[in-house]
Length: 457
Image 1: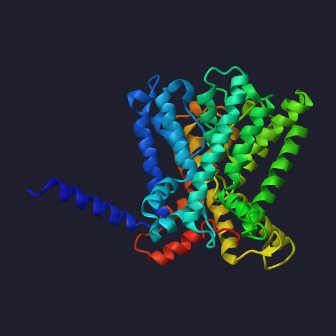
Image 2: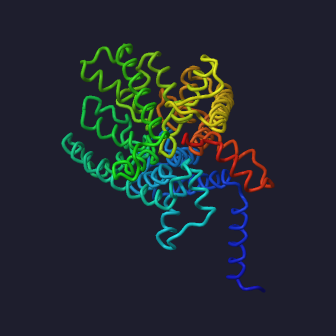
Image 3: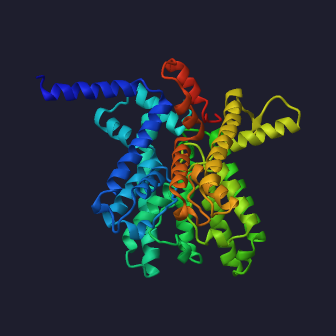
């Protein structure tokens, strides 16, 4: 009988060999699904549950956390113990940074180098331009994340303590990490509705969410500009900042001036409420300071558009991405202007990027339609707009809801789980992971994955 250790060693080598043969897109899919499965297993253990939670609900929460969505079928603050809440926080921390980031960071710390395959996967996961060093980027991401989350937690602790919250410290840590990772998970059953008129809490959560959503490319680019390593921000960073500012400003003014529910509030609270909901949908953080179901239908439409566009490449948010939206807008401008070239921020966009943006929009629509068709057949109670809002929120990894998540059928919950997973992976990467044959050459796979969400630079 052969010894046990060599058998285990051969099995491990076989698994690693199999993983190395996977395309980068499929490797990313396997990684995220593995974390979701691990989260499901941990949340299913008795030590994590304050009350009995159904297995499908545990899977839903684990997927929502890893995908940094924030949709919940049970209240995390009352359904899970402190240990369970720590598991949930760890899941959306890993999901927000990207499953390859922490492991690659530790490998880099121990070995002082990364393999080509790992660098390729990290670059694909964050849509990094070729000029950005992967090792340097990873160090910057981890350090920046820890600094921002620590500062955010300290600020929220002071605000929560002043508001008389008994668990101010843990709540501050949980909500700070959730905000920066654009996860939208809250320990409160009503989200942040108790703080609708608290400018401090609104401001801290908004800053954390925006820093996470604009992406680590912008942060890295800004740092290099401030330290005079670069003369100016790159095209991708400038596009991200301009589009984010334009979208949030337009949505904020539209909601503030047209929503009937907000019209009943004092002007300061009205402006704060309108800004926060617009920011929440655009960054895909999914926090709410007002019950979304009480807002007007016009506001609901605005929020759906914001959730479709989503956050930015190399950030913690989901959606089509602001750069993709900018390219699509450039395509429309080119057609109307009868030009063959597409321009964004005054520069011509490569054909590969144009093709990628168009494919992303079409594939996004196809996945959304497929999910909505199943939901329409499986869910008899909710209205069509509620189902559409839920599906868009899941695919954009946002977490806002019209209040139907907990009432979904088992089939409906499975559909939302799939949409959340697809949204976290990236809509075109998800398609490539399902469609690419393993027999295709590695160079061809890299080219196709690079077309998924290429930066503008």
